[in-house]
Image: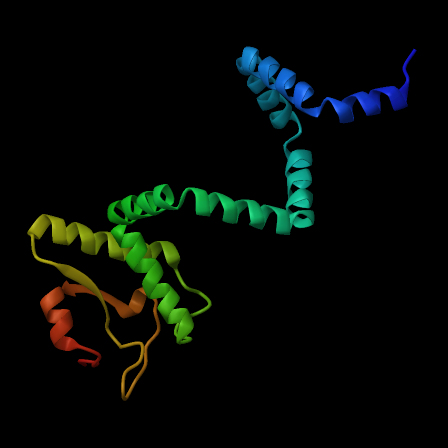
Length: 174
């Protein structure tokens, strides 16, 4: 006969033992367990997503604390991965930085075409690699010019050499 109080006390007194047994059981049947989880997820995708969302909202502080501990414990590895990604995706990083700056100075339109602008930075990087001459993405009408201010958008961007861009400075050459 099932005695609820007895089982609750047993679980409370033997947490480590139960956890070790469950871990060993999982390791012994890992492939089967993962396959079963995958099937369950595919059959109940919306329900699982809803549960995860509720958990994230209800445990925001707990999740933030865990993320902070993880970042502190793995700071060097995270920084290495960020540097590696940045080196391999320089055009994306430059596009993101330009967009962030445009938002700060309120020069980003609501209809901003992120993918198109990111492609311009990728083309500039490709031109640099192909020609050996550094190319940069320039705002035709400067974002903060003395007489006129432009927007950070596709129509206001051009690819020019780095020396031309530096010579142009923060001026609008009509």
